[in-house]
Image (cartoon, rainbow, N blue to C red; front, side):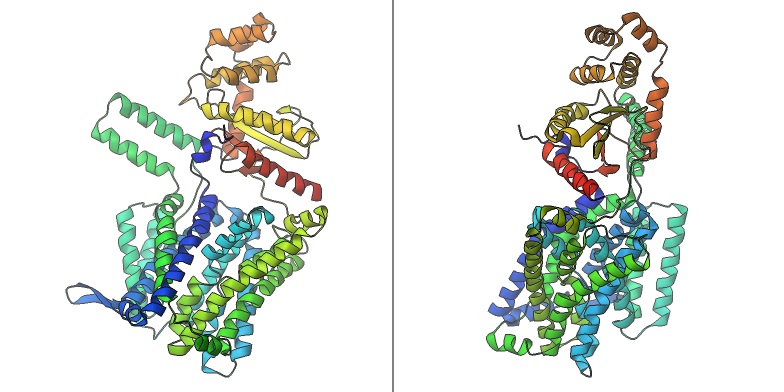
Length: 619
């Protein structure tokens, strides 16, 4: 027995999947970087000649001709920024930034985290031709930063991942605007007008709700080609397409409708019903989440490593390194990332909190903000992209050495910060890591001690709410985990069950929920709750009557209440609260009002409870 329930292998939330893919891809990115360095030093001639090979795509007299490195930097990286745009839109629609005021802090922190490195770079390169490359010292690499964060495991709070991701998304968005404005070539206004027209068509299709994938793909290619021809960096097209792709949670009513379509197909498996079912299944899922699942693994494990392979190859030698570390380009990039990023992000976060007069708070403690700032000093993808545009020859090599050195230095500074935080007394360390910010409350209906079914002390600092279905096998698997959790945390946790009978897949679930409410009327809810979850395969009326007798209920009264559906209104109230909280499946857990995503094994739930308990102690 591992303590891992079946949900542990189920799909994670979009945000957690995004983070898991980014952290896992850091190893592939590092391997590609090492491979590029080895290739460039063993066979420097073949490395450069390969990436300068021209590839042309033509349709009649029209076409595009670029070398392989430009195809990677201008073409494949558009897909990378498409995924960045998808994640930004997801956060804006259903994530941390759905409360619009929370958008201010990461944007200010990201902006200051770019301005300070730029100022430091320009201070060292002032009056030199290399000053034009200031953009190479400003942008965080999300994959590398989250990969390094994963190395430190439990030493830093889980919410730091979300904070770092939102800052990095704001960082990438600003960086793309800068690339489009400051690092684009001579502007062809006719081609730019075509790009604007394509964008207008895409916007109209978005507002009209047209979801024809092939049409959107063709328009995306047209937008990319028009921007390439216009002189504006075409990777901007990826960000635009991502931001236009909305995100939304799966609705229970939509799932019930698809269940009905499946039953009709099961009764009569015709091609027409199969197409209807396929369209119905597709319409239940958020386009944003579906596209992230499709493209994010490719961008993280293939495209970004290929980008590293194409751009990170430099000849490393004692003389070259010595020249680089006396070069203002290298020193400006290293100082910008290693010192400028943490100073800028900390100052931006402090400034946003201060100017808001307490309305905004950092989502983590100030110690975690410092550690997150040092992690943000890991620049790679966008930094190399801008360096390739701004520099040539020796300066380009010096810029690449600076970027790679900044990755190593940022890792060491983050390690030092976590070690210093670990030396603090427990309460001060908790405050430094967790802070005092209030998280978004996902539970629409707060726990009401007068009506909710509560197991445990009423004044417990942590409240675990479960929306469950007595016939759901996953709820049955979760039950012993909940019991173990309550035993382990004692008076620190209270547990609440709310009904969410999935009648379209579990025919006896509604009746079982009403039976539990009939037992409530005789003061025996939890006894009935436990029996029902123990006998999930036997929930017909005859079984329910036997269970009532087993736990000592008045049989006649129970039979009457069950027959009159006396508990139906109470179950309907829970169903309504589930819809308000956007709960579509069972079991769904909330910890102190915050929805718990991912596995509900004892280790994962215990971590969530410990974090909530520590946060409650600081309030």
